[in-house]
Length: 500
DNA sequence: TTAGGGTTAG
Image (tube, rainbow, N blue to C red):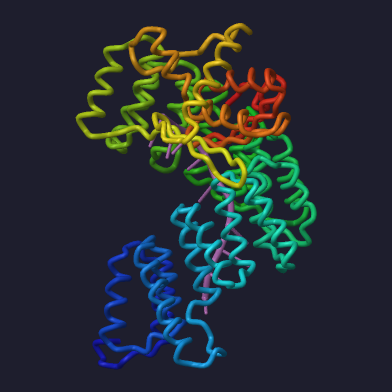
């Protein structure tokens, strides 16, 4: 259009922006576009500004989005001073919603919630779109208290529920460990689409209810709903969490013929996970070689995890080679290999692994656990003692460990990295972030209250048995969401039946 | 103009 020397109007620009935000992943183009708008001297109206704001949010340039958003606020003040008070605000509900959803999409969940609080300070009325974004933030954080508060707020303010909001609630309750509430909301929905079904199927699966996930799938198809690829990911991963190998095989084989869904690399990944985790390592490897597409890091990663569970050092070395070829800078691969060497006492190889990591400047992601107490999310990062009550927590934890030892618990140090003495090894696992978070929960919540912890990585074997004992010792329900599933610890045992 | 579900891994 510029070549024709015809000046586009605002509507055209808005259309271009929307199209770009759907396909463009580079922030540079947004900036260029922003400059062009200014250079060509457009009337920068609210729609265009919102379009640009949405663009910045979607491509992940939150800095520019925030700058623009704040700028809009200043203009608002000027406009209100100059004009009559009936003048519409330049920063309206839609721009707030765009900003909040931008934070959620960029995984800045805390900021999304803060933005909502600011929105309330400015007396801006939230809408159903605001609520959906916020619930998604709570789901990611595992912030149940906040999620409950939002649910109550929706009821109090009579915010009209739709299928998006219903789904967001179901997903939030599942990911915050409240399967009962999720099911309540789900069954109460007046209409359900494929998103709602997938939320509940995935939720059942990640809580260890594989059979119920299959039942939901069957019910869904009876309702005339056509399953999509995400539904099958949920179904197969649900089978995997519960060790339902033959059921998983059955549905995988029926995907294309019966349901018309072409198995993608994700579904092969689920199958490798299902077979490998159960111990069928050779079959899992065979499946990888027979795949119609090139296996990716997720597929090899699933097999590597299976090798770790079933202690197949030889195969795991082969698998790691593939992984390191695919991504030589992924720290996780080195950590995995190093753990496997450590478990069979090959300390020289452990050292080599660590040296390669150091030489290439690769770090491992530190463990991080969070717990919500009194409407505040407390975060505990491995090796970080900055929490104001850190000393009291560790003292409390030491006492607990002593008690557990008297009960006969021996620390499981299979995957401690270093070739160090037993005492040092014990110290290195005693303060794992999830233990600190649970200890803090025990100290700061009333007796009998369940404790919910969210962890960014998988729980180690020692933390898992520790939680089982703690649930009995303190008579508390402890719910831990780890990287990919839930563990409900009650009266000395775990809902995963130690299959995870 | 704004909103929702997904496989491995430190």
